[in-house]
Length: 334
Image (cartoon, rainbow, N blue to C red; front, side, top):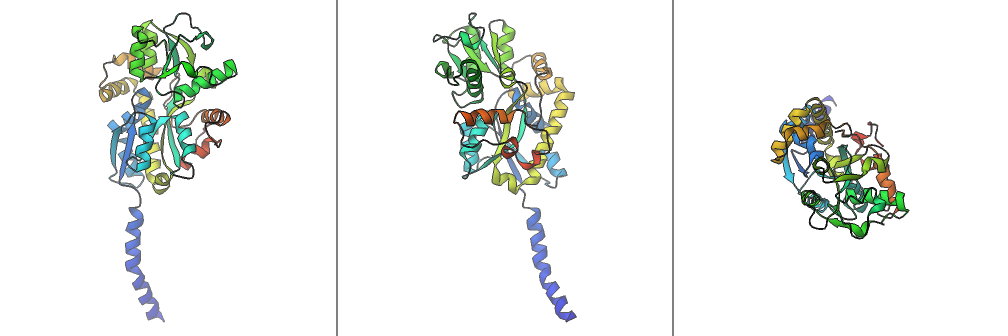
């Protein structure tokens, strides 16, 4: 009997030897991340330049992780690449990310990985007659990166609902235009664009020029600081690669701490990465703005979900924990 037991155990050794390496290599060896343009993506720039994701991955048991960085503009391109398998982590505003979460439920299924930070977006205008959104007329045109479904148009709808009792009251005044083009139009006073709902550094460029003034701050609409952009992935990728996901969030946390401790160096990194002609001191002032908080913790996410559900943009109203992957649930999100 002892001999039989020994032989049985010996027979299992090859199987066990084979199984253990298979489990060890279950995590991905490559992470493909897409980012867009603007200071909101500074944590990703810092993580990239300082190799923080690779560092945290090694510490989390995923050695030799190769990180590939892609540049894509707009939620549509992000989603197409994510769904087709050409991308692992996508980035977008929190409002359109919630729309994507709802539309992919029961199909691809996405999960939000982390917030990139909380920062205000400001509606500016070069029309001296416009002091509040009540003053806009049919002659005005409000530039947005993407009408109706982008981050800025949804915040504008939230403001319109509070002001007019009609969320789509100003939709007919909005036009799609990239932030740089809209900024040029506001500063030059040409092209028929009289207002622009935008983010750093474009809003600061306009306001500091003296040619535009603020009409609306998104923090006022939401009643305080809110998440602006997020990173998201398919639920399958997040479930299959928990160590990689945890390492990525840890890398963002480390990047955020470094930005707060080194705003001058962070400004230089941003300018080099973006090949920007902005004054480093100008970028540093934006980074030091007390309204801007680079954090992975979601803020006011449920306020966006509540609005989108109420006006019929999404079919199910999620909590912030239903939107974000489990590794983030210990944070004090909202």
